[in-house]
Length: 162
Image (cartoon, rainbow, N blue to C red; front, top):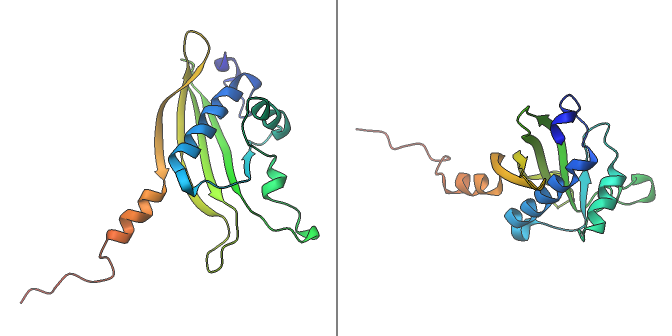
């Protein structure tokens, strides 16, 4: 059970299915904004290769972070989409909270490098069969936030009353 790793900030093998749920949800929510290759970045101390192997065995099109962030020495530039897990919190009741940022690493003309696509915290818990389920998601940012800004007439001051 995940709660036995309460103090650890590393992702444990018994939590890899939680990451698979996050992967599916990120792609589903992003829709046509999702792009390939897709890489998974793990918290400090969590080796990425075992997680990537596990997800690939499950049929996920996922890569090691070095694919999306290649060495510039060889003339390759960052590209693709990164799903970054940067914080884990385990509650005594077995809930697992995972902070996730998803970004587009591809360099686009006139746009800054590494465009943030979505950021928030997934709240997961295992059911009686030991399967991870997403309980809820706390959004910090998603593309809809920019669409709402586009509808704002913020550049024009309100009319002055006479």
